[in-house]
Image 1 (cartoon, rainbow, N blue to C red):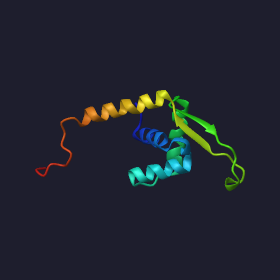
Image 2: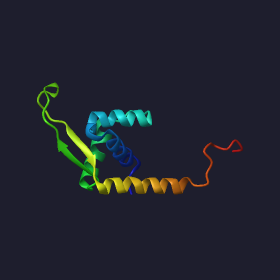
Image 3: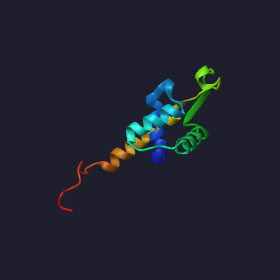
Image 4: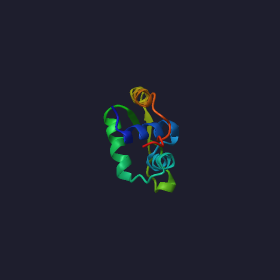
Length: 106
């Protein structure tokens, strides 16, 4: 099973496609969660996901805007997509037959 952070990062990488590098991933996570994500909160799970074989990474060509440094681009692997689809199945099962709003009689 994935942690919630790992799940959100995998989904962000999948959504961003060829623009899935750390800065854009953080922006996407902020847009989805409306919360600040530190670099550490993104880098550590990215590393774990790569080590688990759920993400692959490659270095893009160096760019002058980055002082000649390359961006590390991430992409989900088949195993990674299977993992997020399983998390979706689990979430949908967990929420089945529950209200969409907090009941007023609490």
